[in-house]
Image 1 (cartoon, rainbow, N blue to C red):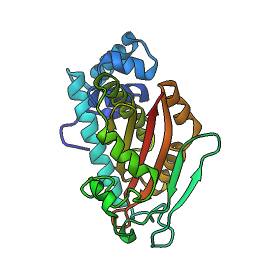
Image 2 (spheres, rainbow, N blue to C red):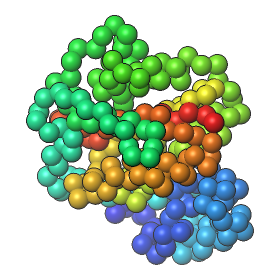
Image 3 (cartoon, rainbow, N blue to C red):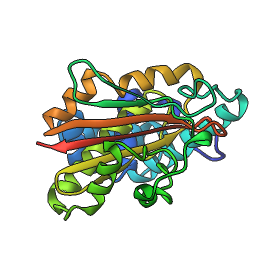
Length: 251
């Protein structure tokens, strides 16, 4: 535990969820919308969290929570052996595409970053991307969508709302697997990109990969007016980080 940190073990799951969303910049109103609670219920959880920990500010308590969880995650990862990259099956590049049953989301499997082929000129745009460099396929529709979302004239009101919603939705999902790290979301006019690079313990990794592909996530985002078009998973052989991207079409 970090020195001089409040006792966060006193907080229940609902209070922790609200504080994690607050740490991402959400307000009581937006947290209420995302969690299907009333604003009063959200504020009550914040009051209880402050009372239990003795921290006067909800924002400060949210900051302390994220700092503590990041510290705990680092200690846990330092103490366990690095897991075998989940999708690097043979230590060499291999690409496989399949369509999920009942869903229009394409999964890109088994990419070894260290042995990926040299990017084609058309993929130069991703060379400096901190998450997707050397991971984005150079000959498939995800590359076109990567370029599209950055080339669209941004619909500011729609894009901002979708970025907030997607960031919160994926953050809640990741938190179930011990990951408390901001998700990168970028929306344009008709398309949104979600990208993340995280390290997950070996025993939690399979569950996270499964949930990122299953109907509840797809159906939830469809209710927000988004349809999944493509997604990819990969692993960094050196760091054992999991990499993920997905694209969501408006309407």
